[in-house]
Image (cartoon, rainbow over all chains, first blue to last red):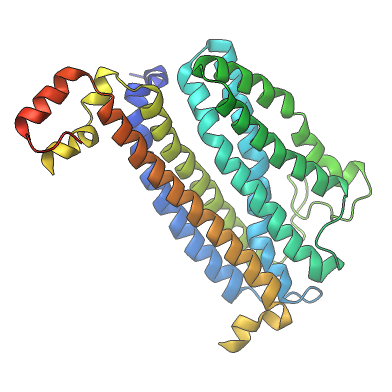
Length: 250
Length: 64
């Protein structure tokens, strides 16, 4: 029999699955991060032109990728929420926003600390950096909009519309280095060409990217369990959870 | 070892990047754990009366 994915569209059946998966992805994130840091900070040699400042790449690039990818996933959940009116889709979108904002913040901050020794400035209003800053404000906007609306179902719809409209910024970030003459360099790694970097550095980057992926999934799933408890409060299945009865055992 | 920490003269930029990222992630994890504890506590308070009666019968000392 095929796995019935729609079973997991119900918060009651998704809750225990999310909790289990969050733990596994957290462990995976830790393992990948330790391996990636070891390769990136110890095994990979010093860069011939940039010296050791290039090692910021191992956080900057995975964080920047995640900042855009999380937004796309959030937009996808928002579209599903609007199309099917499924509560869990909105809860997933809601759970992704803070982690997306965090990844955007990390990408901007590490970019500044990489820009200073490499370009001589912490910040420039170039297309890549400005559009990434707008992404941070979009995440803040979605979070603020949700907090501003009391009725969760109305907040779901408003946030979904804002998220989907804001998604236009993602291709702008991604292609900004091609469309405009930016201080930020073009892509070193693309789907269509061989990566233009040493393989040991690429290994470190891949490991750190896997860590960022696993961390983001773990954080979003952990957050969605809290969102489910908040929004399903009073439901019978919730009152039967073992963690709800913890005070009895204690 | 000191060569490792000096990062070829770029210690400030490299370690600020790694350090601030570590702090940001630690803050998010702490907020996630705190939120989970808080929503569980609030949900226990908001629980249907029947289970509160059951629990207080089992453990008369605490309703929290």
